[in-house]
Length: 268
Image (cartoon, rainbow, N blue to C red; front, side):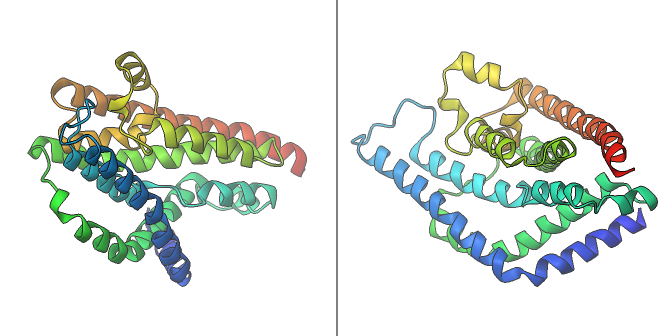
């Protein structure tokens, strides 16, 4: 375990070397966020004082996107899939076949070091954003909800990583995987609740979607914090999220084991 903590330390130093890039990326990531907040404020403003029938007040809708920004900073994958695919194409994984280092845990260490570096760079612009809309901030729905929210955020980060890792494993069979990465990103953006709260969807579609991994990438932890997912639904959702993380881990292991056989066949 000590060697993987060392990987985290090295990854943190490497990421902080490019801190200006992180800061620039963070600042530009808030542009669409401000656009969505402005859009919903206009929608509620044009409702002439009558809240749209979507289960969210104006304050809740604005706060939803604020939480989206926070969870995204804590859990989003940052080019890990591209880097893993590059390691496979360029033969860099050969060294991990000869050393007592598990490649999955190595990449997971780099993933978390990247999140720490990104949070360090994002704390100021994110703080400014939250300060601009501090009137919309709200406390968690309760202590149980806050506890489940924290656990769910950790599971979200793991699920994000395992899905990206598995997608990158396609590089064992395909020369170019960018199309598949963009397709997955499109599904995540729509079905995770990043673009809009999934509660706005028709009930049958929402219930069906909750049995897929996508809502647990964003909507579920945010909904738990805001009290939109409560009671039995909260605990069932947490169990489903943990189940998807487990499946993601097993899938990542399976993809690696199959890919290494293909890699060995070509590598001699």
